[in-house]
Length: 220
Image 1 (spheres, rainbow, N blue to C red):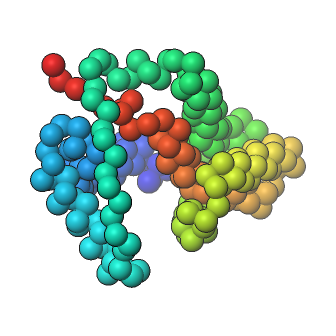
Image 2 (tube, rainbow, N blue to C red; image 1 turned 45 degrees about the vertical axis):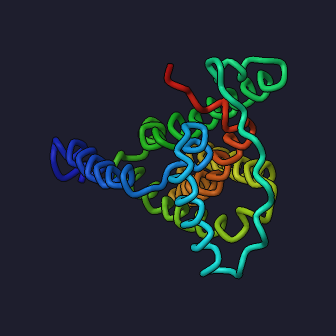
């Protein structure tokens, strides 16, 4: 779309906006967190959501074991996010901030702007974009590869594996620039996209570093 019109890039952003608009219905279709509903005193609604999830699991796997007695919820008396900065969770917060800073630096600063990097190295813009787009099939392959093992490997091993692959992808980008090789460029783009999809458990891992109560804000 970019080379066929001076405003092709605008049409490209327009397609992205359509995809974003498709997410709006999820705001009304996805169930709320049972823990959040419990903290807010909406016990019946929380029970309904849990029952829906249990029925889904039983249909796909097998009957569930008896439910153990519920643990008491901690009553929130102050702004809960302040706990993120205490001695226990502070180091985790710093680690998460550094991790996501460098993750997005890689995903958007390197992989996202790769066509411009290769144009500066002598590739034409359309050629660089085409080979990187071809390598983007790695997103699909990475997601399909990660799905069967997402709950079998520890999150930290999945994340470490993904970023090892991403490091190799960036190295291949450098090689592609040095030898002007479309093949190496495509392989690097594929591995970079693969690693991005393979690192999806990092979102889950980040949330699991902190108790749910730290993400809740009670209204006065």
